[in-house]
Amino acid sequence: MFIKNCWYVAAWEHELLDERLLQRTILNESILFFRTSDGQVVALDNKCCHRHAPLSLGRREGDCIRCMYHGLKYDRHGRCVEIPGQTAIPRQMRVRSYPVVQSKRWVWIWMGDPAKADAALIPDTFSLQHPDWRMKPGYLQFQANHLLISDNLLDFSHLSYVHEGTLGGSLDIAQTRPTMERLERGVRVRREMSKITPAPYHQRLAQFSGPVDRWFVYDYLIPGVLLMESGVRPADLRLREREKTLNFHSCQALTPETATATHYFFASAHQSWLEEGATDHIYQSVLSAFAEDRRMIEAQQQLISSTAAADMLPLLGDAALGQFRLLMQRALEAENPQT
Image: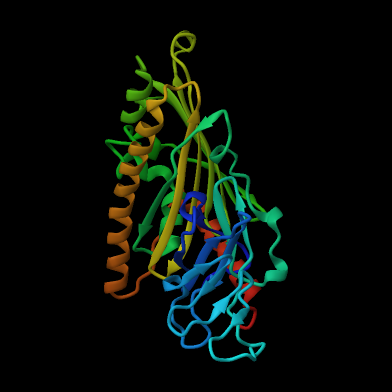
């Protein structure tokens, strides 16, 4: 089961340019996305109400969609406005329309009760569209349950091992205990390391001449949105005048496709003082690291799916992921009190 009364990231804004029709499966529902002539994003049930042909194989006619199986035409609200060979259009001839909001380059969709779709609940992803920050948009698909990816993001001790040659670079990350704070709709995690070896990609960006201090501070929010401030600076106070601090802001969002597949939207923004080529370098480094995550998590999912069920045994470092899973379970129960 999935939480439905919340905002999920459905697409990057550039995926809906021009006359493009985008089909994306979200929470086991096939959704058609397109942008109208006035720039508004529309999200409709992809199944034509007649014979359930995919509207994503249809044709744009102005701000309407023509099903190219038997010719039914739908407006932006999902109402059927034309049936070839039939003048009367029954009121029930329509497809579901979903609330959609575009905010700072992400397109968000509300899969639950439309009356509860409050845009104020969308978190602030400022670094996706801010003159002081640069980033390159990213997207991956994981063949794994979204909660397994959440577990990964809520325990950065894995950086010392999964990302030993990329984002990690130091066993001190795994040795450092994070602190965790409960939020209304998530958790805040803080992990700070002092006098450690810089990660390989940080070293390429800043050429640190000695040990560094490194930190991660992030909110992880229902249903799976990470907003993180992180940075690296020389541990030696005398070097800080000559060697600049690296500051990053990361926005990541998990959107379940099915029970064992997840859309992963991400961006790792850096401050604009870094040279222009740094944007692509950071993107490629992060992409390589996420490929390492995907290899591990997809193997984990395959093993879970193909072997007998067994409990996962907790560690002290699991506090944040345990609290987040508890919040998710409570949100599910609030939406489905009879289950």
